[in-house]
Length: 163
Image 1 (tube, one colour):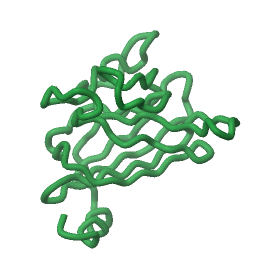
Image 2 (tube, helix red, strand yellow):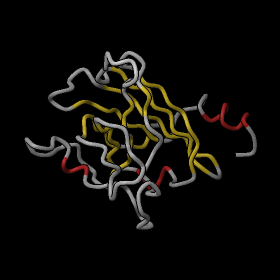
Image 3 (spheres, helix red, strand yellow):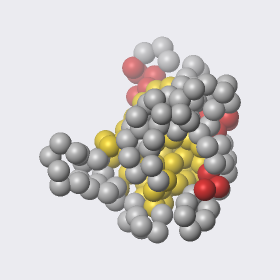
Image 4 (cartoon, one colour):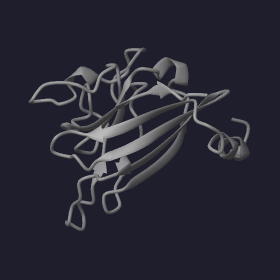
C-alpha cells in the first residue's frame, strides 16, 4: 500500500472475496459479512457483525476473538457446532498469536462490531475456501494453540466474489 488513498480506493471497489457469518444454535441472531480486498502488498479486511452477545457489566464490555481457520466447512457436532472449521490457519507453523489466521479482536457496541484493518499475513488467494470464526471470548494472545478464546459462536466460508 503506497498511502492511505490506496486503502480508501480498495474498499470502494468490489471485494475480491467475502464470507457471510452465521451464529451457532445458541446465537441464532448473530450474523455478519467479512470482505477481503487484495492490494499489492497486503489485504484489507472489513467486518460488519450484528447480534453479538451483550454484557451489562460496565468493565466487561464484550470483546470477541476473530480468526481464520484451516477448515472449509461450518459444520460440526452437538458439542462444537463448527468443529469442521478445524484449527487456526497457520501455514508457517508459528506460535500463537503469530498464526496467519490470528486477526484483531472484535469490539462489540450493543451487539454490533465494525472492524477494518490491513494485513500482510496472507493473500486473498491463500484463504479462499477457509472458515472464518468468531469465538465467545477475547483472545488472550498467549495460550497455545488458540488463545483460550472459547467456543466458536459464528462461522462463515471465505469465497471469491462473483464478478
